[in-house]
Image (cartoon, rainbow, N blue to C red; front, side, top):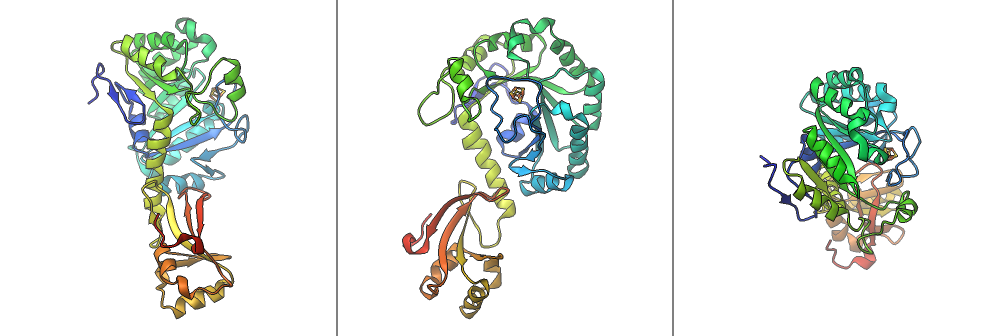
Length: 360
Ligand code: SF4
């Protein structure tokens, strides 16, 4: 149980007195991010959406581009997702798609698969009812920064009250920046939770962020100086408000790492080593594949300790180490570490002749 007046701090810089159900799954790395469209009716100066997605009608589940329902299920199974966060762009610009995805996920994983949705719009009761009856559990509103000082007279107040009456868990999610106190007062008045995200520089927003006078906290990170302090002030002043401050470090060091670990543990082959960071480590032999297989058979390497692709053979890193002296100079050999996610982006390659006794 989270006591609303008790502040919990985490090592990665986030803090909260309340975590919504959606946030708990996210914290455990068990939530799939379903980016349903890059289309958006707004133009927030801090928008972190990448160039590849911004204002493009594309869908991604985590890093995986989505072209079919099977793609979504494949990604959800690969990380053993216990929930999904639907985001964009503005998801409700493609309402039918969103409803289809919610139904798909609930049919596949059952009602306990938790789904939350972000929106920068103020949906009508009819749309909220449709979303809830299809399976949506939680909705997070993202009001336009230009309206933060007059939320009481906006359509948001009506939408929030309607969302509560149809049975959704309701919150507001905004970046933590000046003016957020007014949103906190509004959230408290409507008895809904407030998620404050640490404001971050991204490739697409850095120019606008500079123009608005923001700078990074330090040279290494992308977190904005003062964003955390703003959230601290709010959580201290607004007694009774359910608040969660999600730091930039928490997203990288906790959520992402845990999701990678879940995916790595699900997708690792018998010979892949899962590292503490959630990456996969294995050996690679490149050359004429048939000759490589011939060598492995000659050395009695069991078939479950290697796998052939069209251009190379992947094998246990310790197997590669064991057979190092037998490897023909016609083959290239290295240790490879990659992400377990779609595309298996390579993190590092270490040539066998440079590795010495390998120790990751
Ligand atoms: S509402 Fe979201 S996706 Fe749209 S511009 Fe603002 S931050 Fe970007």
